Amino acid sequence: MTSPGCTPAAHLRPVVIDPAARRFLLVPNRTVAPVAWSVPAHPMRPGESFRRAAARCLRHERRLPAMRIAAVTGRFPASDQRRHEEYYVLVAPAARTWPGDVCLLPAPDARWWTTAELRDGGARVEPEALLDLIDGYWEGWLPDGVISLE
Image (tube, rainbow, N blue to C red; front, side, top):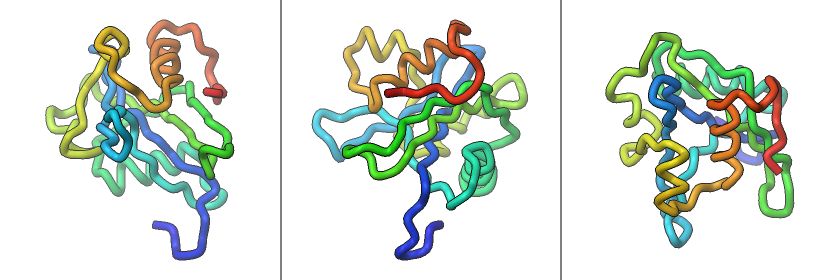
């Protein structure tokens, strides 16, 4: 947790993925209308890498079982709309699949989606570039490393 008056350098947005089913977890953001599906943000500690922040957040705070972080990470720089840099880290199970209750860990109303379901159903996703990041990862056309989502 960040102490009062201490501004985190960046936010981590861990995207829990299920490679076998090519789906990922999103939570509804009801603070905007219409509802948009997104990934919760977690403040990173100053100087903390996004990989370290993901391990801390998911293993220790969310109690996620053993996981692996994908080689592709999406990054949004800070801007007029966002006060902090954001890292979208794709997190897969270390075992073949996640336990059945993993969708309850990010939020009680989290839901598994495929990019096709979101696109075909006209669901709003924040940020829109998240769908391209996921598709690029599934289809293998994104290079390893940090990818700009601008």
